[in-house]
Image 1 (cartoon, helix red, strand yellow):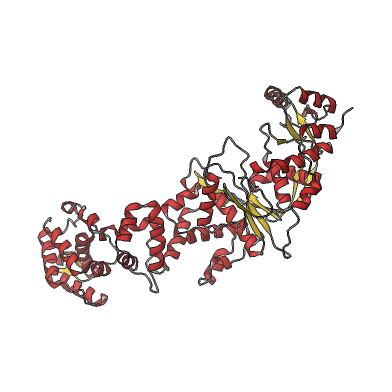
Image 2 (cartoon, rainbow, N blue to C red):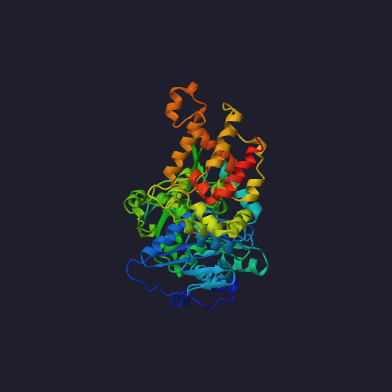
Amino acid sequence: MANYIDLANLIFPNITQTIDDLEKRYPKRNLPEGAMVTRFAPSPTGFLHTGSLFTSLVSARYAKQSGGVFYIRLEDTDTKREIAGSGESLIEQLAVFDVIPDEGYISDTKEIGNYGPYKQSQRAEIYNTVIKHLITIGRAYPCFCSAEELAELRAIQEANKEIPGYYGKYAKYRDLPVDEAINRINNGDPYIIRFKSMGDHNNKVSFHDEIKGDLELTQNDQDIVILKSDGLPTYHFAHLVDDHFMRTTHITRGEEWLSSLPIHLELFDTMGFERPKYAHLPVIMKVENGNRRKLSKRKDEEAAVSYFLEEGYPKYGFIEYLLTIANSNYEAWRNDNLDKDFYEFKLQFDKMSLDGALFDIAKVANISKERMAYKKACCLAKEVKEWAKTYNKEFYEKIISNEDLFISILNIEREKEKPRKDYAKYSDIYPIISFFYDDIYNNIDKTNLEWNSNINKADIKAVLNDYLETMNLSLNEEEWFNSIKELAVRHGFADNIKLWKKDKEAYKGHVGDVSEFLRLCLAGRKNSPNLYCVLQILGEDKSKSRIKETLSNI
Ligand code: GLU
């Protein structure tokens, strides 16, 4: 009579190493007390989800702030969903947001660290060693169930209103005699490997989550698949093996995994591996028609981190936003510590939100606006240039054609106590400032400007002609504004809006209208950055020629 060892040897004839060998090869890490080992474990399925960036940022911060290790493991066992090259692009996008692993998968040809390989597809020998051990102790077995048999099973469970799945009396191959299993394998029958659960869904398993606290969950009783027919492990099993042998201390992952936690606990307990600590992080949600739902890859552009990169949200704005969803006390800390680097804030598990965090793009924009406004023009110019190089070639060409000009433009109403807060993202900038560049200005249709229809064209012309004669750009801003008021008054306009409002009949308009004429001439539209600064940057000659060109089209 054959035994479990024979079965294990038949299935894995080439596996000679033992669990002990693995324990020695991947020893406990020598880290100071309290240092956390965390990881981010993306699947290379094409794009970095905003929720994943959140998870990875939080995981990386916990490792950093505790003097531990943050590593990346590529979970590439779902070959059907894998998109070639997307592992590397994930790493690149994470790096933009300062999520840089100390260890792990770096690219398809590079990894760092002693606990690898960090790509699951290269870890077959390690998984097989653990499975071989489980078969040997009678806690894993080959299952020969066909798709039809599984469907039949499901139909019976549905008819009987029983819990679906492969467990207990429904686990057809669980107690197949070893001899029969060996015969079927020798016969070439296809099979997968299942874990043999000893759990009971009438019982509970107690567990402490770092975020959610003490929980009582229903025990697992499913004989889950651990090795698929393609020879690759399932998520549950790889989680056991990888997080144990990579010596992860804290599993920081999305709360969608909480429901399968009983499986994981049973796997750890069966192997006699110390359970890692778990912190199930809130999932990022969105409100739609009054209902909460997960940010969806298909429906929401903001579900992909690439959206924020393309739009040019500054990384510091986006990271800070994510910190506000990570810890409820972040904003208060920020207000008290405006001069500090946001990484000085210490994340705490007990300040994490307990259920899905709501994604609020307006808040991302507000934080970004706030932070961008206090950047020095030259620093911001560098960031924008870097962004434009990839995402807006036309803008990039303009920037590099005259970097000093670009810095002066960005410097409008900046580097002062109350700077203007008009940019939430880099892509907001070009549409507002493109008129400074002659080729863009020249393309504006001057015959079709939005002149105030309440004001006579002849009066507009008179004002502009006068300004051509009297323009003086050596005045300071206050003096200059007085000169514009005088110009207004000379042509029958009120020098302030209140006055005009009191008696509209007495005036042709007010000083604001006069500024608007100038804006239309210089920028081709009613709104522009601070007019005094625009004139200063364009200079007298260009300002005059733009006014003349506009005049000839009125
Ligand atoms: N590959 C899994 C995912 O992308 C990882 C989950 C985990 O962090 O354990 O969802």
